[in-house]
Amino acid sequence: MSSPDERAVVEAYLDAVGRLDLPAIEATFAEDVELVLPYAPPGFPKVSRGRTEAMKVYPEGVMEPMRFADYRIDALEGRPGEWVAEYTSDTVVIPTGRPYRNTYISRFTVRDGRITRLAEFFDPVVLVTALGGEVSMP
Image (cartoon, rainbow, N blue to C red; front, side, top):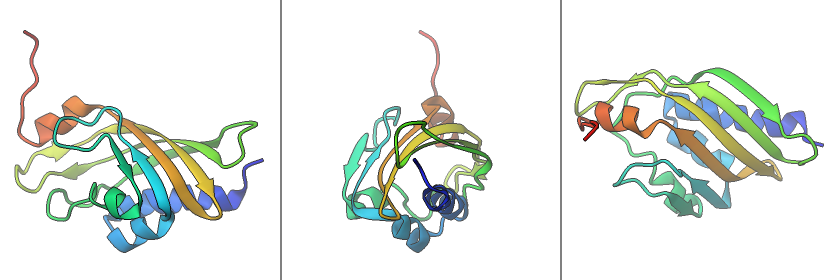
């Protein structure tokens, strides 16, 4: 069974990214964390292994704090340490000045008080357009 302490780790991660507090984000990750971004557009890694590589996904100077909100965090029944979270962001991309508002669903694996795997699913079109790109139908 998943524990409230594991839920607190997921919430600490979301709060830290919401503030773009890099040391606090790093503190939630296990040394061998695997960060998976299946829908990441070109230029973003789809898989980062290890804390050092995972932290490169959170560059400074690209976005204002993400202001994650509307958390819904649920334990996966029968899968100890496994969590699913739904949440939103509301920020601005610094180089373009464009708003970035997205919705996310993420799956977390928490072991020994740290995130060992995080798979984050978001709408890549929203990200691309906020970064100044275009996506259009052919």
